[in-house]
Amino acid sequence: MKIDLTELVTESRNNASQAIDMLTTIDMLKVINNEDKKVALAVEQTLPAIAQAVDAISNAFQNGGRLIYIGAGTSGRLGILDASECPPTYGSAPEQVVGLIAGGHQAILKAVENAEDNAEMGAEDLQAIGFSDRDVLVGIAASGRTPYVLGAMAYARSVNATVACVSCNPQSPMTAAADIVITPVVGAEVVTGSSRMKAGTAQKLVLNMLTTGAMIRIGKIYGNLMVDVEATNAKLVERQKQIVMQATECDREQAEIALTACNGHCKTAIVMILTGIDNVAATALLQQNKGYIRAAIAKNS
Image (tube, rainbow, N blue to C red; front, side):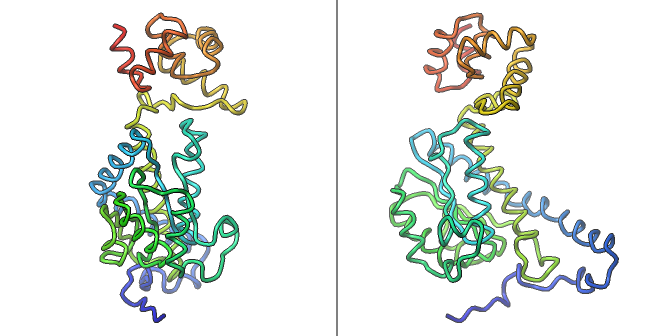
C-alpha cells in the first residue's frame, strides 16, 4: 500500500529545530520547550468539539454505555493510560472506560509490526468487547490515517454508535469518518516524524479533558474534589479524610468517624456531615439523586 506522508502536518520539517543536533544541551531543551508551549494553544482551538464529546460520553455513562479508546502505538498507549487511571481516580468500574491498542496487550510495551495496518482487526477488537450503539468510540491517531483505527470507526458507525476522533492532521480520513472531530494542529515536531512529542502531548491533554469532563458531568466531582476516590492504599486513605474535611469544613475526627460509619465512602460521609443524617439515610439520599451530592443536600433541606 502506497503511503504519501508529504501532506501530513505532523510529518513536516520544523525550521526551528533543523540544527538541534549542533546546539548545547540547554539550548536544545529550550527549542523543545518552546515548541511544547504551542500545544495547549492548539488544544484550545478544539474546545467546542471536546465539549461535544464530553457531553456524548457522559450521556453514554448515564445510560449504561462505555467510552472506548482505540489507537496504535503511542496513541493506543495514551488511550490505555487514560482508561487505566479512571478507576483509582474516580472509583469508576474498570469496564466503563476501555483502551484498545493494535496488536493487543503485548503492544503496550513493545511495538507489534504491521498491526496498525489491519483495518479488519480494529472492527474485530470492538466486536470482541461487545461494542454497541450505547457506547462512544474515540479513535486516536496523530496521522489521522491509521487503518486499524479507521476499521474500528467504520464498525462503530455501522452499529449507530457515536464516533469521535483525536488527530493532529486536518482533513484526514479519520476526520471524514467521525461524528465529532477533535484536531489540535500542533505543527511540525522537533524531531521530524516523532509524533509521540507535541502530537502525543496534545492527545494526552484532550483525553484528560474527555474523562475528567465526563466524570464531573456524572457527579463524581464535588467542587473540585474527587469524592468517589477509593481508598486502596495508605495515601488514598489519607486523601479521603482530607477530601471530607475540605468538602465539609469539619475537623479530622469528624471525618474519620463519618468515613468509618459508611465504610470509607467519601460521598456518603460528606452528605452525613453536611445534613446531619446517618449513613443509611445518606446512602439512600444519594441513590435517589443518582450520586449527585449537591442534589442530595438540596433534597434533604
